[in-house]
Length: 113
Image 1 (tube, helix red, strand yellow):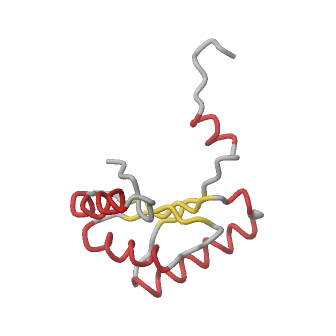
Image 2 (tube, one colour; image 1 turned 60 degrees about the vertical axis):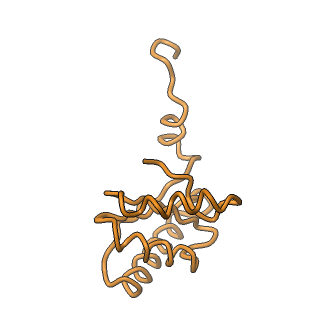
Image 3 (cartoon, one colour; image 1 turned 120 degrees about the vertical axis):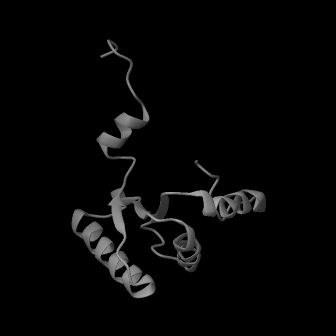
């Protein structure tokens, strides 16, 4: 189930997401490199941990960082999440500018290339 997320301009969207937490089997939490691990992120993860057996972190906007900086950011997130929750989370770097993701977002019809 893809919910509308949190911190929306519509409070109803946030409530819809929070209401679905008890039903999820996997939580994908998107954290931006431009504001890594905000208080809202920690609060949402804290709520999700109560219900979701599997929480994974998508680190977005990694195209704004060098490969070295991305690695540093991942290590920082792992460290902070471990301190906060005493558990490890899988973290996946993501950038829409990466050709692999760009091609998946805009699939090409067979025979059009």
